[in-house]
Length: 114
Length: 480
Image 1 (tube, each protein chain N blue to C red):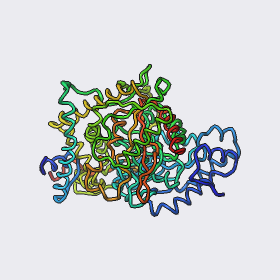
Image 2 (image 1 turned 180 degrees about the vertical axis):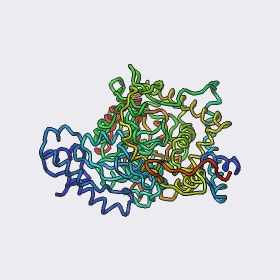
Image 3 (image 1 turned 30 degrees about the vertical axis):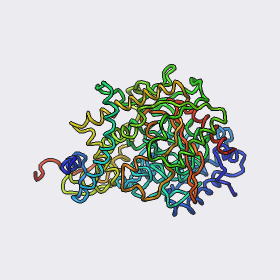
Image 4 (image 1 turned 90 degrees about the horizontal axis):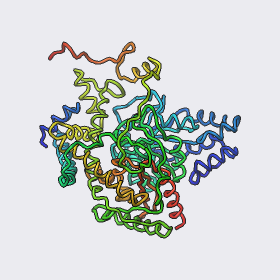
């Protein structure tokens, strides 16, 4: 990783960085990546290259399944309205740093100087 | 009314409250007095709620006027405190971060709803590493929590406040969250019990998300029994959490007295001598009390920390995208909306959080996704298979909770990888979704002796097995 990669990631992550902190972050991230690199030696010995099935890990308690290898199952609920409309609106809008007349206020995104 | 908080348990407090030996107001006042006296030095509570005495008075009313109801409410009048990332309606919660300054929870998390229904009292909110990222609370926007056994040492993290509160008698029981060891590691550092339940066993609804495939609410207490009581109140399926589960698999385990130790575990570097000797002594203690110790092979376990530091930041980078200065808390104004985002996240997030967001962005980015994230998922799968094999032979697996006792404040704060290594024994349970408990196992030989912890990890939904073994081990340590 290089400084320009750090800059690219910061832009993607929506975080602005000062020039002074970039080299420090670069060194730290390179250290961490060097450490996690070892996962490559764990999988190089297997031929399995397909995607793993552990992207979620909901756990089932079916039958005699006490292994840690249970397959993901989603907990679903009926598709019915459980909360009265508007009951949280005020609390949620008021949590926004900038709001007006029941709406969250943001800067305009169209017709700017660009 | 003089209440000995050192010896108190939920069971003994409930007995006294039911008999009228003291009231919930007396009990709450005893804790408030301790908080008043000790919090300045230890920095455990970020805030004490202003309605604590009203809550206690309401509990006392029930004790006085409705004995049957009082008996049916398992936690009536019992003083709790919660980590700052667990939502209680109408109370501030900011996950130890500047970016949530001024935020007030608009609803109760499911765990809190269940505790309220059982009559629990909430004293206040507890310090933590920002968004639960860290192993020492040094990443809190509110400063470090100090270890009650030695104030030059960390209390551990990320639930450092939750552990120190128990060790210094500032609450009877506390809630934390555990994504890679954040309940168990501080519990070990502070000499208390820390339970990380099965993934999904307690709803994540109303818990500020860090790593969604790893996060779970946990309990911290002086004794295993207290954690057991609280776990049984807050567990269960929740329609607000589609990964929630319930059940008890413990009865399906037929080799309860057979405990696994991991082949080659002590050969890896970085394990303190005091931890090694305590671990070996604990094994002997279990053997002399009728347990069979079996060596099991878990070849993939050595990759656990590396896998964790790919999957967790990936999930962090996605979960923390919501903090942008628009929806909650702190906002730093710029010239454009994009500037608002960039500046708010720069000033609102601390260094460790920014590092993990960027690292997660990297491992998920096109070109690196296969090399890191997908590989980590594959190794996570291998780990689950290794553990499933091991659990055919043994009921649970024993390791030290941490590789060292509590370290000195500032010692690791400049080296992220060194800090991460403190999680080396704990991350595994989160990756495989298993329940795991840390039980106090003794002290090191320092001038100010520091506590050590022993960790038991069981198959999914075998919490009651862990409680049974944990209580047994607790008894052995006390009798030694």
